[in-house]
Length: 159
Image (cartoon, rainbow, N blue to C red; front, side):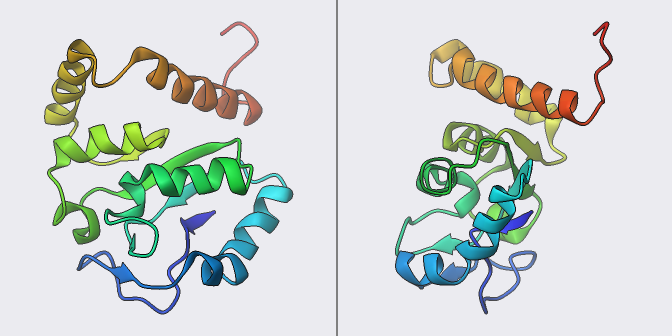
């Protein structure tokens, strides 16, 4: 499912940083409904947008722990959370590719959709070495991703 927490009638985050000024109650009454229905029906993954929900946080949804908490704690989503493309202006104009990789993981995302792995991986390794990013946090995502792959039949019994 995508694009949590919803786009509403906002602009295009491919080309600009998008601000959404709706309240959490408005989002609950409209945008969250199809996500909750999908979660209740067994959705296994949700892609998070880069929109900034200004009544909830000051950063894009993809790097907001508050948005991930809404998914996990309020909507009770247990599956894989992935980001939208890092090259979209809604994130790329807000933070560097390397720092974005760090922030999305800290925020609780499991998978990154980006293309700057040559610089992101060394940056993340430094964050692990410094203790800013824990192996336990990474292991949480690894478990969800491996469970997802298993459920999809992508891992054989011998793996």
